[in-house]
Amino acid sequence: MMAATKRIALGVMTTALVAVLAGCSGLGSGGSGSGADREKGAHGAKEQAPAGPPKNAVKLIGDGSTAFTGAQPKMPAVKRLAPGQKPPQFVVFSWDGAGEDSQKLFSHFRGVAKKYNAKMTYFLSGVYLLPEEKKDLYNPPQHSAGRSDIGFNDTEGIRNTLTELRAAWQDGNEIGTHFNGHFCGKDGGVGAWSIDEWKSEITQAKGFVKGWKTNTPELKAEAPLPFDYDKELVGARTPCLEGQKNMVAAARTMGFRYDSSGVGDQVWPKKKGGIWDIPLQLVPMPGRAFETLSMDYNYMVNQSGTTTQGDPSQHEYWGDQMRDGLLQAFDRSYKGNRAPLIIGNHFESWNGGTYMRAVEETIANVCTKEGVRCVSFRQLADWLDAQDPQVLARLSTLAVGQAPKGGWSSYLSAQSAAGQPAGKESARKEKAESEKKAESKDKAESEEKAESAARNAE
Image (cartoon, rainbow, N blue to C red; front, side, top):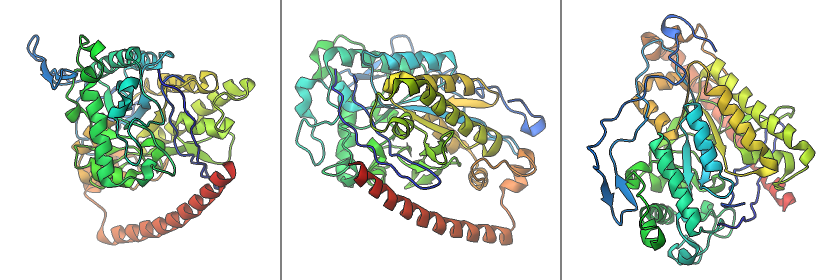
């Protein structure tokens, strides 16, 4: 299995928040309303029953590592909001570098998702399907062949990961990508890669998924992955949330529909560079005077620093702190602007597994509520694409936790969604521009402090 490697945490500290850039690890280490405001069931419209392919209608692709097996099962139906209808409360649970190791966390959380009728996104690292002895097949940008900051895999690890990937897709989950070698920071980190280098990285990530039978001959008798990865792969999260701009420029020419490599607030997503920008979000850090990123790693860094196994007497408290922060973030969206809540995780037992407990308790709490849909990024993008652009524009004017004045029925009525009077719209745009300038200034100050904090940490 893969050896654990050191991760460098970069903190962004202001008096208002802390946004520590996401790290990754190697494998191995309510009530209903009435009328137009009435909500659907907890998971929305009934799942579509795909027209299943004829018996044995499996079309192998390439060397048989992947195959077309028909429409993906257990995908939810997608409908446009009716005028005045309250939006669903979407929650996306996602996993960076998804792979099955001795901790069995991939299989565990796949079971948790089924129990609570949740769909998730698994961002697979391509090198988790490449055996150590074939590592030179990976040619990372700005690094020598066979380099990877998260290692590679062995035959049994690849077999176990394939088992989970097959089952996850058949359960209705999404298989995205976390790319390959997970290079962060200076000296060839993904933040310095060109558009063409990103294209190479994406092509290789796809290649390791599409060619695992060739690269691991011992597994040739194994069943193929039941999807065409060229069509399945529509989104990603970059290592350490770096290199987003050039990655998106490359990815939008290669079939990607969304990216989750940014940092943002709990507001409705918009398109950036032609694809949906659905970032991780700043959420409460209970008991502290700042917010942190909606990811297990970032809670950990704010609690025990880069030490993954801190004071055991604090483990339970730290897990509760993360769970309560996520629940507070959920409540302010659920009762406010209904912006999707985006949560990122790793299959890791940091600080005694307390963050895994926090995530599981969050899933059990939120995915069972009225009007909540726990979905994958792909399913969220499907829903966004199906909506009236004027309705999405109206939703995007709501601030964090801001419920529409007068209720959803009037706020998203056909007349309201069509737009405000020109005078008011002009004033709104002026205000938005002013706020944007202030935000840019705050961001610049935060980045300066982050660099200072990083230098001190080093």
